Image (cartoon, rainbow, N blue to C red):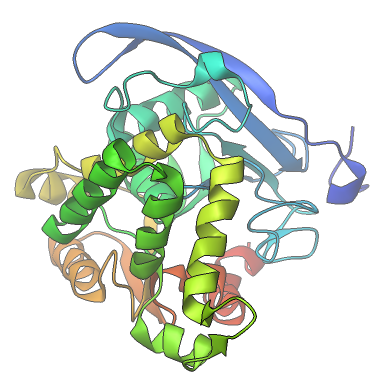
Length: 337
């Protein structure tokens, strides 16, 4: 095994998908159920370096680094989240289908909420002997799970980094979840059609204008924007299951559904986590205004919290596009350890 003095390259490791059995989990409906929690490890061996947890977004998974890593421009050898210096762990939200085992998909997509997912992640960490995390990063849905984790254990995360997300689902988000849910339940091409709609939430008009400029593909007899949207729908249909999509979509509206104003005050006054809110100024899913409100509220209550923005025309998906800005915002946290 590698040590801090003789680190292995991420590419030299297999980073195989591993499993943890979490038994007798209390669900929101008060029933109990066992779950298989899948995860991947990157970088240094556990307990040999500071530990960072990365929580994935709606169609993401535990493969955050390496050749096929969906966040490899952020997490990897000599990246900002440097796997030659840190231990990085990423769990799969149960039911996301990444392990391709049909038995692990949830037949009832309303079975979990983000608070239960957060509790499952803590149980998985405990089974790995981890009680303290140097950092938790999460974007979009993963950021919502990250907020839930710090509310459950306000003294167990040194740096909480929620990106393009918020601690409580807004009416706007809940409404869009309903639209997605109706597409997923009633369309004859549910995954493709839901994805086409969702791309309008992840980007915005200025982003589309810059990318396509009204171009028409004569050979396809359609506009470039139409071709692009259909492509994204088709690609997701090939790699994502309907059961997983329904569940991940549903989870969005459960983010922080239990949190009251008094909970916010108590959390702000008790947490030792340094909270670094990173907001996309053009985000149309988790809006800048709602995230500013969260920041101002927690700051007023005394939480150790900061606020920074990614400036982008690309909307919500800027956390997957504007890597130069994102890396610059994160650099002080990880390089000054």
